[in-house]
Image 1: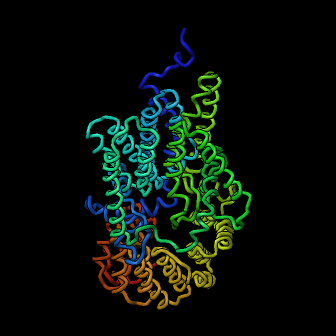
Image 2: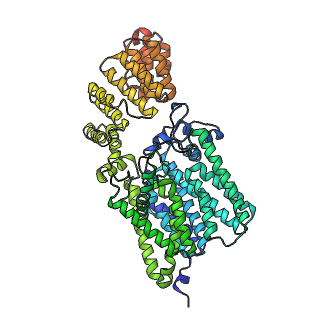
Image 3: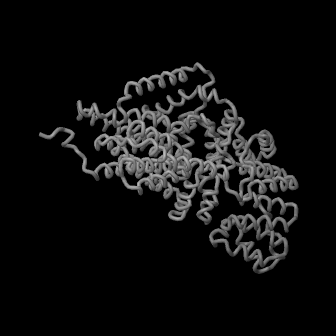
Length: 614
């Protein structure tokens, strides 16, 4: 008579079908979502994604830096060229449609889950446990940040390529042909170019040799197998230094012993997210102010229990390998090497280390499967249902669009780091009352974030308070900002002076704005308006023409440029500019009469057409 496990044995193709269908079901809400947070700077507004460039040029680009727009001394220290290249391919395939970019993320997640199943099966030799472990990974709610947020793609790319590299390395060492080793080296290169996590391939290979290999080769052979990966790591750091100017991510020095002391605290935080997934969101976690905080002490207890577990399970080679490899994979996110990230804990960073958690889960399943397979299967089904349902809710309510995200973060989770984002979202909707409330909250909670002051000043100008806007901007003058944020600071200062009719001051600040961020058409438009108000129509036309080169579909800028041409006595130029505006837009912006006058009466009729708007 067949056993229970034999009766439910999965055909080779069925795990892939089940995982694919469940992942698609869980992530359906993301298909109607939009770009969020860093997506705007890294993708939507990044000319390097929208404009054609040579393939080799992507490997000389620092992540988040556009050479034509950022200042030479500005750096992020992140080098992830492969992620940027995939964004470019997405744009070629989908256009600038967020649903297309999200679909690519989902495909990458499905492929990673499939590969994880094959990887676990290679090491554990148990189809049932490999299926359940990879299925739990596929629907685990902690992975939603990496999958649903387009900018989290680098975590999926490095995981996919790292798993491929390790898989083919093991295949080669256990007897496969040389092509497997070549594939391993190639995928290792792709992993490193996706994210820094790819550098941990070497210690993971070392652990594999210590615990799992079935073939005990000569020590020299093992060392020689490390050499290509070691050289790749050195090459990566050299290339990173050439491109970014930094060996590591730029950050403030010092505090090493403090960071080492809090390692158990961060390990406990990450394990909590994996094994007790509730109240998940976009965490902003900092070190506790108290060294004897109960959470810090709980972290030390957690590490002690993990050490005891490894000691007790030492003979279970696969379990030991998974625990040690998990901590190796955690190394880049334990803040030992200090980074510029605003948080110490993030869900998307766990996408990579969780592959080793999944491997360890297979060992935790074995004994219950033998003792009571039906009960074990029932419990696993309940966990999958909970995880999948929770992931669906997160995708629907948190990761769908910025409006939902900001409201959930600030109102529900009291994550005031995003209060400025919620305020900006409300400002776009002209909800000035609530927007002002959240801007003030953001400035109170994070007084050193210059962007909040800059955006708040825009609200004050919009509501007729330019003098108050200047006061707010003055408070932010000495705060650190990116080139674009500094450009916005100068632009908003100029706009405030423009509304106070101090046009010379306005022009001075508008010129600084385009110097800091020449890729923003609105800055050029405002500079043109400032010159126009001073009667300097030659410089006004030049600035508006620069702006129109950046945003040729801006009907309002075309109207403003036409007004300037009329004032300069060039009605034919005005006609040429206005005729490129769609007919329905002409009436909407009040330019139809201007066009008729320019055509019929020449410069005499259009000199009184109006003023250039700021």
